[in-house]
Length: 372
Image 1 (cartoon, rainbow, N blue to C red):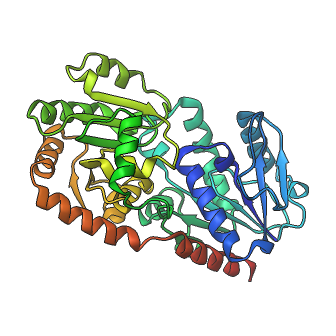
Image 2 (image 1 turned 120 degrees about the horizontal axis):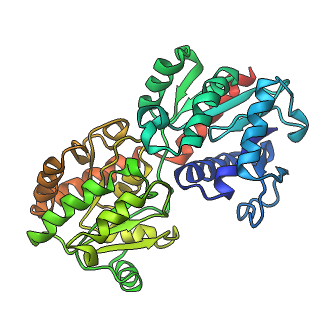
């Protein structure tokens, strides 16, 4: 029995949650009898829909106490094996590895952004990850990195042997595909979106570089190239500077913030965009760019970290620290319908090379190696 930690999924933690849920559903679709689930069950948390029948073990602790207990258990070399009885292997799908003494473990590492951009993390979270992740990486039987960029970061930061890390790219959920015009129009009406808009999708936090995106948007909006900037995503942390800058912006009324958007509406929002823009200073993978391509949205994104690896030849790239470079890319994209159509076609082809079926098969191959 393989036990999957789906805590990030039931807690709906943005990209980590999407990874945990998508991987779990893809694995279970191939062989439902081989898997059990584990998660930290806080108040109000519901199990994953449709998976309630699976063997499931939970703990009922707050997020921070549970993280501290796991770390202290690792330091003391305690065994939490009784929490996951009958597990032949445990997969930690986020950066939290249970201390297990007789059970092999696989740890997925999504990024080391807390090392690259420490000023953009809350101090307590940065402190915790700096102390714990090297330990978790050493203790794990094997590590999955979601990009080659993350694999290189791990090897450089912690001196891990290359054979201990396997790169397995993520994928867009199959629901992310081009949507019909009537559905796009319906979603546009319900969310009060303009006919022409740039789209950003992710948690609102400093490394997403939204202040520079806003500055670039102010220029292309003044030139009449677009009517709105739609920022989809929850408020994360350290977002005060962005909202203060937004309140002073001459285009404040053209910036729409619908907050969290359910997955049933998000593909149509992607499809209806003039372009999707991801100006992040660093990404471990950059799943929203892949989702946008899968929905037929032309993509412009940063030329750093994992984004060139993910987007390939299907996006226009810019230096995320250079507002004028961002403006030039947006001018080129918004002013050239043929270029947008070419990027749309390349994006669809690129996104089709990533799939959760492939992720599941490659992840199972890791399990097989560890179990052997």
